[in-house]
Image (cartoon, rainbow, N blue to C red):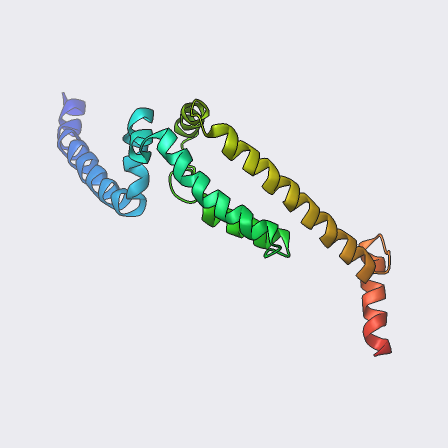
Length: 166
């Protein structure tokens, strides 16, 4: 009987401590996570419904991509990093990944059924080729600047000697 009497006060405090702990941790996690918790609780269909119609998304994005490729073809982007940054801006909106892998995969599948999907795919392939060409040109320029040095130590030695000669 004495053992039971010792646990009676604890029987009252354990639920109280648990409720207070949940309230405190629940309030702090709401403030920290905000949007993340709401997107995790939504279904894949609800997440993608917020994006709108997949085919409308493709059409709107295709218009932005067409304007982007005109600038790209005119030579406005001299570096691959500039090209990539501008592409991210052009793709912003309904094409931006949500971070939910299942929802993003389902969204891709629904977009692939759209009539204009092949056009945007072709545009992306053109952008990829241009980015590869810019990257190759950047690597060739770096090779010329380093005098054909291959190792990091050799490159640093040539650069430091070049600065001493000036």
